[in-house]
Image (cartoon, rainbow, N blue to C red; front, side, top):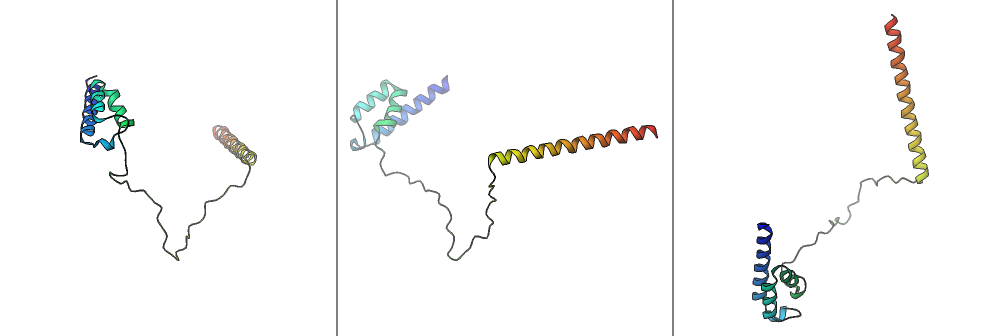
Length: 125
């Protein structure tokens, strides 16, 4: 619980510093003094309201670079093979899977019979 109280106090102090250092033209809906009173009287809700609706977010600030795909130099040909495309329908894929499962089941059955046959002939010898 003390951690939550510290977070609320830190949020309130951050909001108050932001309100005080901003120019009146960068505020929306209410004057600076009203925002200060709201944040002091209702620390959590007032701070959230300030950052959500009271603050003017302009183009100024730290620009965040956007990631772009690397451009290929002119004349360079992509030699990577294209990924294989499965042109079978879902029903065909399911049927292929069923056949594969049946094949594995039969292989296990043959292996089990071989082991049973070897163990029975090995014990009589």
